Length: 329
Ligand SMILES: Cc1cc2nc3c(=O)[nH]c(=O)nc-3n(C[C@H](O)[C@H](O)[C@H](O)COP(=O)(O)O)c2cc1C
Image (cartoon, rainbow, N blue to C red; front, side):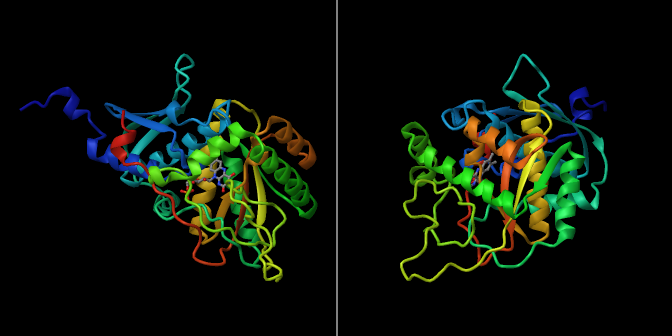
């Protein structure tokens, strides 16, 4: 008996597609907005921006939206590779359809490499960790690995020295204050940080802890976050490494690539039992973003600021995700 053409050519079944989407939505996203939608077209998966979940105040260009979706595309590809599917991926495939961010097409079968399997496995446990870090240096071997990953994706990863960390700290603190004092920006952030009404999105907040680092974390509107505690005891010394991920150009395609690379970096850190947390306030205000670029002498456009290290404890509260059915189009 001859099977219909569509059946014989179907390399991507519905179940495999939905499992891959479940892995894709584990990607980090700005304020856990999860600004993505997926649809299947025979053997291709389309990844689209979900503009209903776009932070229009904080991210008017959609740069952070693209970064978030770029990470989801990387997770999707890893999940398809993990089940021995060979894929091609085109970012921004249609200039007339700006919300179509990527098309991932299954083109055959091929065993995944060991590094692909390791990255795939890490995506189920990776999470942002805003807790204090230990006073333990990050090995140079790991930093070299991270830089190599960034360069392979045409990005650059600058590891900041002591003076540059202080410059970053001053600009980040300034950005945090400007954001907090702008009612529209503060209100938008507040909506994604109080997800009690919608527990599968947004950033769950744990009580602020005093820290001995220079660069402030995003306070998410919490009064006193990160300041010294009332006992008068100095906070324990931390030893975070601060890195800036940059791209040569600054357009939707490079924002998606930066998101893809960010996922690879974070999954590699997870493999190495290190953790990270982004601090992107300074990149959300165009004037301060330009100042950061100049102050640090960055060659490219800064897309992400990360603090990484060994966690002191069990880590921050885990974020949740919307069910797969809600992100299928
Ligand atoms: C583009 C982008 C910007 C982010 N900026 C910050 C930030 O400034 N501060 C912070 O604590 N987390 C930041 N995050 C981390 C998100 O809040 C986090 O990924 C999201 O809540 C999901 O949680 P998870 O990473 O633990 O899965 C950012 C993530 C992305 C992708």
